[in-house]
Image 1: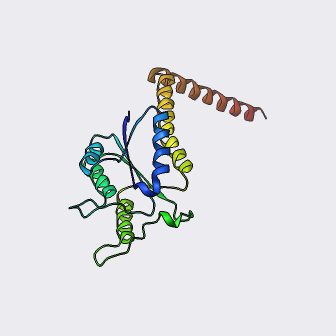
Image 2: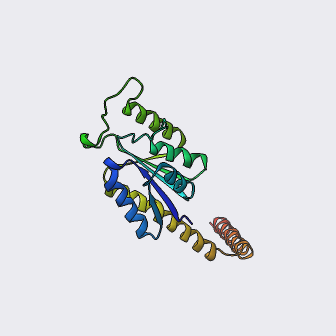
Image 3: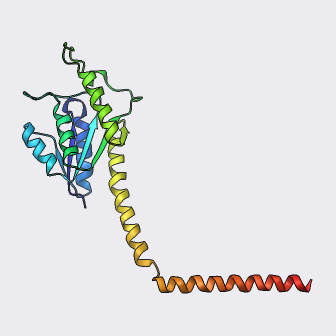
Length: 195
């Protein structure tokens, strides 16, 4: 069972979404961890997690000193490198997003945040299946479906295995059905001969 779940996102634009996801996971008795603290602490938390949830909108995020990638990309790379299962969410491109929450920093000769974000999202699309969201509610609804749906499938499979007849009983039932089919065909054949 999954216990430790790391939630990765930028802070400025997705704080409400992260908090909603965290609350939903706690309500399911799971242990979510938010990406807080220094870079090394965050990456250590990613390495010790059972599942990585990434949430992206229109910010690439902060690039730590002596790094060339944003913190969220470093977290993602760590999850990929350590083969941690990932669930990746991106804001629906047709959803009207608050322009004040878009990273519009002045591009320099060497850095444009929207170009970096585009590159990062493209990389994620190549490695993971992407789920889209609009509001915090739509995001938590999908999270609940993912976790509760899995739980329901596991329960259904367990009940199906408990209720399944043994191979011997199953063979006997198939034999009786075959015998009844033969009797029925013979009865039809007999009726057709008398007419």
